[in-house]
Structures are given as C-alpha cells and as structure tokens.
Amino acid sequence: MIRHTAPLIAVICVLTGCGHPPTIMRVSVRAPGFSAQVMDALVASPGSARLFANTGVSSVTAISSMGETDFYLTRSRQAGAQEMRRNIDAALAGFAPQLPAGASAPVITVLPAGQGVPAVQVRQVDQLQVQIDQKKLSAAGISASQLEEFMSHAHRPGVATDKGARDLENKIIKAGKPPVRLGDVARVALIKGPDHLLRHYPPTEQ
Image (cartoon, rainbow, N blue to C red; front, side):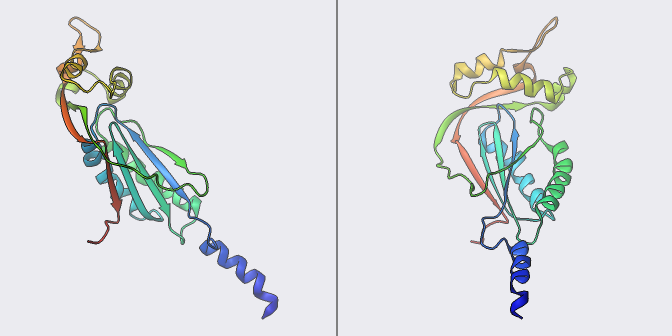
C-alpha cells in the first residue's frame, strides 16, 4: 500500500488542485456610451447565465460600469482548463449575436495565478447614457462596428453634463449630404446612477 501513495497523491492533485487557487478567466465586453445599468441589463444578466451553463464554471461574477462589463469565471474543480475554454468559446459564439449594437466582441483573458475578482466600491455619479434607436441606425446604414468605433473616440465619460450630452448628440457619425449625427440615431441622456453594478451567478441565496 505504501508503494502506491505517491501515484495516488498525484492523481488526487490533478483532480482537486491540492489547495492551489482555481483558475479564473475574465471575459470583457465593451460598449462605449452605455451606463452601468444598461450594461448590467443587456450584457451581464444574459451573459452570466449563458457562461455558467454547462461550461465547467463553478461561479460567475459580473462587474458592470460605464461602457463595460467584465465577467470573472471560476473554474470548477472537476473541469479541465482546456475543456472549460472550449465550452466558454462555444457559449460566447451563441451570446455574441445578442449583444447590443455598438458592443465589442468578447475578449477572454486568463488571470495570473492568485489573482481573483477585484473589490469594487459603488458610488452614485452623473453619467451620460446613449440610447440607440436600432431602426434608425439600420436605416442610416451604420453597422454595429462603425458605431463602436465612433463611440470609442467620441464619448468622454468625464463630460457628464447637459452640455456634454448635447455636444455628443451633435457629433457626426457618418459623413454625407446631409451628414448623420449621433442625435439622428440615438438619444443621449444625463442620468445619476451607480458607477458599478455587481451580479453573481448562481444567485446568492437570501
């Protein structure tokens, strides 16, 4: 029996990790101009459930802020890293077409060993929220990638004033006669809300 101790320990370590911190992957989605509330509703909420289901993930923490959502995926002890990555790629392939217009393709990053989910302090702040009219956007012949490119350069999150909202609406998104301005295909609103929203999956029992 003693002769088999080392091989048995090696097998157990492969299966359980022998106390090492689990692998965490981050999936990032960017959508400049969307408030934390919109990112939570349109990206974090549906994405958390999809990334949790049958992917080898034990938990998902989604952190949404102005124009971005980061999903932190903790690997289950029973799932291999390569298997988890394949399953996540498949889940994202089904999720990407459901992202709002102007959102970037999801980007996956494997966090260094020992790096976990960052701590977040939530504050109430003024922010500009861009509400896209999908029908007007399509009628103007503007693609989601064009909108994303425009917003990444035109929108400055720090300019959260009524004047900043009007200035943003007046920016030209597509040249022509007449040119198409952002205000022709979207409404920019000044709102007050949390600068971050957190979502956990599976939901924490109350």
